[in-house]
Length: 289
Image (tube, rainbow, N blue to C red; front, side, top):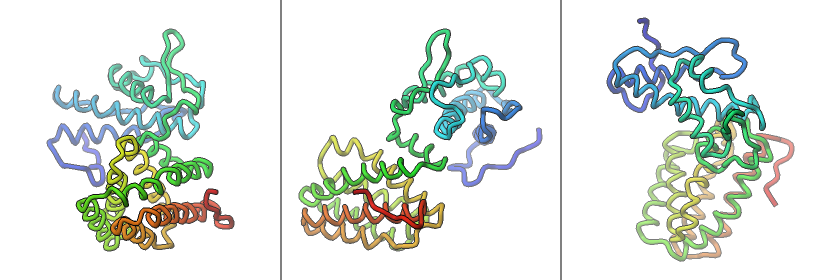
């Protein structure tokens, strides 16, 4: 069998069965609707490889269908290809297809009913704050309205979180935030290492609040931070260094100045929104009011 190219930057180079399964996932990169031809996959190998292939493939299929829904390839009320048709054309097991649909249903994006099939639900039911859905959203070109909504969410939560963190933070929290800042300054937010440090900074800040309910939102807030930062980098939008904004937040929290921490975080979010709006509309950059 002719070998395909190894995917760029795999997480690990494990045994051949793992690599075969990973290569098979890449075939789902093409749209699943309107392509005019079936998506073909490699399924040779041991029983273990088959199981690994199907287990990974349902995630790739959910990803592709989710992106297509967010992109408008499938709109609310559309019926997705049925289980038998899809498992045949995509050369996947019916159980893998069903698992992909379960993933989307758990995110509120589809619902399945007897005799009517699987339909795309109305947008109001989609869990847009699911970190995975946010990632899919930013694989498309998110609307200005949606990006503004993310920053409004950040303005509602992060300044208050910074205020609480300034009162409740531990010395260990301060140390972790300081370490994250060091990496951010050294690597910058144009690199993967710098962006990971940025997420660690925001993650530590939220958990420093000691508020269990707020901490439960941390994955969504961190995803919003991550994907808006990546969006700016993708569009060559990191023209202003945001590190000083983070330093001011850190300094206020370190000295337990709750009012300053809130104000500095609000300023950070508003400036980040302005930076993003300049990318979308260079002539009009306005922070949320």
